[in-house]
Amino acid sequence: MSSKQRVVVGLSGGVDSAVTAHLLKKQGHEVIGIFMKNWEDDDRAPDAGTDDPGYCTSNIDFVDAAAVADVLGIEIEHVNFAAEYKDRVFAEFLREYQAGRTPNPDILCNAEIKFKSFLDHAMRLGAEKIATGHYARVRQNPQTGLHELLKGLDPSKDQSYFLHRLNQAQLSKTLFPVGELHKTQVRQIAEEIGLPNAKKKDSTGICFIGERPFREFLNRYIAKEPGPMRDARGRLIGEHQGLSFYTLGQRQGLGIGGIKAKGAQKGGGEHEPWFVARKDMATNTLWVVQGHDHPWLQSHTLQAQDVSWTAGFAPVQTDIAAKTRYRQSDAPCHVEDAGLQGFALRFAQAQWAVTPGQSAVLYDGDVCLGGGVIASAQANA
Image (spheres, rainbow, N blue to C red):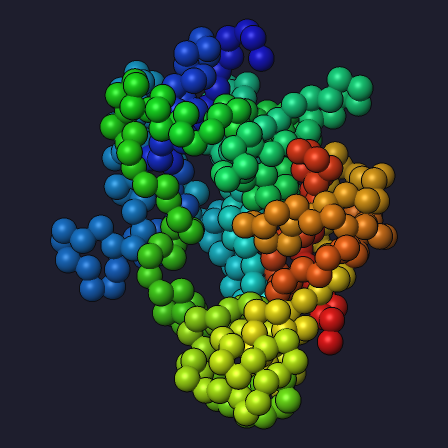
């Protein structure tokens, strides 16, 4: 992209999107900033005082984004997508939890809000491209003409996993300038040009949850349905608060830390920590096991559905790599029955706590091919 274009940048208030806007302006493009407000039901903690920003920091973030726009000398517009977010992202988020699965709302937010509602809004402003501060890259393959989603160059910050549902139309209109940089370089640039948020901490999690206890938040929308908590031998060892409040591989918050099984279990020992291993919705039973390497937590195969391929069609490769969660190294696997409806993966090495509702994302080297929502996984025992 060499000629000057009108580029609308999603300014979040963070340093990555701020440097994104700076880099594009430096390249000579006409840059316009948009601040997206995606949540408004609970901007503040229930008992927050007047000086307490509450759990969701959108108001503070907008002030930071506006300060960045002022320093860079660009316009900024505040746009409210809260209604779209609630209908397209949050409603699905609740449906998945109520079904006993563990969804990833950031993936849905990118597909439905940041690269759909935001993209449509930007096009109405006459934009030729949009840009965000994601650590990923886009290139057009000279042989096929297809736009490819690539990992960001900083392996510790790569966010292609969260962007795997983007399609050709979205990728063709999107720029990820900081995907070419490491985080340390982004911070350095921000300091050099005097950005007010140069040292601002990275945001963690999704805004509507913020720093609050997750179970406390979810309990406002999903009723508790306590039930039995059993170990791998079927023994009753406690009571859970509702299957929706637990995820596979969870170690904290089980309330059984002091309970020790009599004798060692397969895959664990008498003093090993407990992990959530299975959720039986039919009997409302939570199954827990001792030991990180317990067979119930290991899976060689999975089935995925609700598939999205960046190219618009399933990959022809069958021996590639995949991630079944964000913070995970690429795992070699074999793809079976890949199509527009679903696919199956068979891993060379067992994968830990493969979780229905999370996404299995496929890679061919640095190229993200797309992925699907994990429907089921076959444990090793």
